[in-house]
Length: 592
Image (cartoon, rainbow, N blue to C red):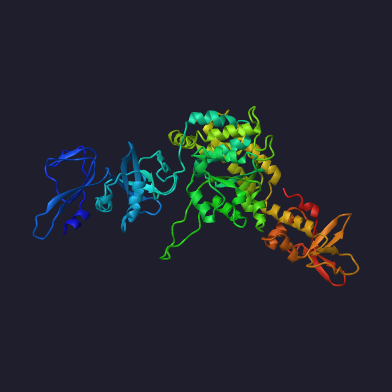
């Protein structure tokens, strides 16, 4: 075996506490945390290569010693909890601060340039001419006995710990693993007391701001209680204050300027943003930046918590991105209104997954109480405060949940009683508002929010009831069908319908949708089947009929058609007869 081969297969890390050996065994790598004197020579702290150099086959090998870099320790072997891949936990110091990085072993394949980039980017001091020695040092290092778990996404880990890129709450043998190049969005500044005084206090009397804080804190409770993800969409005119509410929510976990995400990404980009904020909150800025043709699909993805499957070059399925998160979106238009710009019909399911909250027509636009200031001054003061104090409350809330656990299921059931609904669909939205209320009240009990008890429940219930009053407690698909038929009549009442009792056929009608008849000074519209399907696009005939029957909107049916057809036979102008669905447009208005 050549000297180079030995150097790449032997590795020994020096223990600063152990006595120096009388003689160096070569070749080998060694790490000295302090100055070490061996065989009469003193070696400065660092990672060293002690080798042998031979000029020719008959020449005697002479010892060589190369300082490679600052002390670089291999602390443990790592095993990724998602895919089982193996790595190493590396540590070193930079300006008195201990730095850790989980290096996947596959990163050592090839020249290992990516490993050098990460280590140098994080502050490891390296001797440039010896930089190529780092890869064989790490590759040849014997696997440590200690094995720890790693995860590539933040949030709750199967061990019970809560993992963030820069810290692990409630666990020792688990670490966050990334490429080393991703930005850490979970940063902090200022103090939690400063956040409470300058920010939380000014939320009082402002339901939209209280809801935003509760939304940010609810992420860690989703998995504990079993509530699905989704979001709330703050709707209001430009400069109404809804963006400030989002910055305030972002300050719970990190720097508002970098923690907030954007609608201006692809569906895959939204999946990455959601996964990188797992078990916290996803802040999405102005919805007008989203692709109108994809925005509803993106809302579904955020709520469903699972990304699109992809394949490797070997045609094997890659692991899908997963997440549990509540989203806090904003925009001048609702989700369905923005989708309509791209020609997409409103999907009731998307509207339920990203429900509208009024943040534009309150007492002071998005605010109800500006605490004795003008709206402009209030906005400026809070905006300045969130730039000075952030990143403390969210981690402190998780730490308190771990240190002082409570029966969250029981607490959720108690809070949920305040959000009464009749339909199952409205009930799922109520679950979302209730989990936000629970997060706020739990943070109040833990003295993390300096609000009076009941503040969070009152604000969340107020905004939920406003949504319920606007949308209704019925089935969302029923509302969408009835609204579609009502809009169709409003658009085409005279251009595609004519009087069924006329003596002659009306030749000016193109693409006939049916007829109308006047009954007790009220028009009833006789829809043919193609028009019925066109008006409620995206739904099958049976589903449309179920909605119409639920609203008692089909008002005339032949006795023999009461079973499945629900139609009435009419003689049509010009001769002949056909069956139609006879719809009372007034019944369509009762969408709630």
